[in-house]
Image (cartoon, rainbow, N blue to C red; front, side):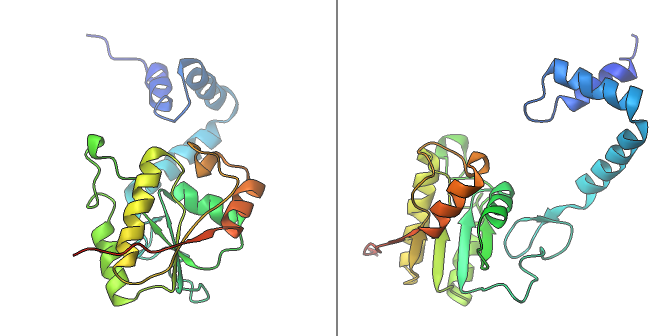
Length: 205
């Protein structure tokens, strides 16, 4: 049996990237081989190192190669404000679009029972411990305005209510069913700046 040629292997490997189909992968592979082999080598080296060394911050679960990410280890950040987001890309979006100086907690997903994603998979036990040991003065829920995102936001509100922690939601401008990652910076900054305080619901034992 003949082994798959390296060029085909390279094209197939590039197709693992989001939005990259056969034609795009072929163009990328040929560009690297014909015009930028040095860049391709550098890409492969950094990619291999990143896959080996990047993990999760022990405090917020964001991606980092260190025990604590740059935000959590920054003493100038205001730990009285905790913003809860679905993914690391949301942290990047908010850092670029807003003047938020608090800290984050990254869920790495959203509640979706049909997909087997429950509170444990989102690290909500870790978040509950944080609420008990060092509760913030405000939680900003910045989940995406999808059905799963709204369900996750409601669950987080219930968690916060048990500890009497005020909850705010990002407000106007983010379209229903949209993703923070694809929202322009001006709209995202306005939505974050006009966040609304959520009235706590009574918690039944």
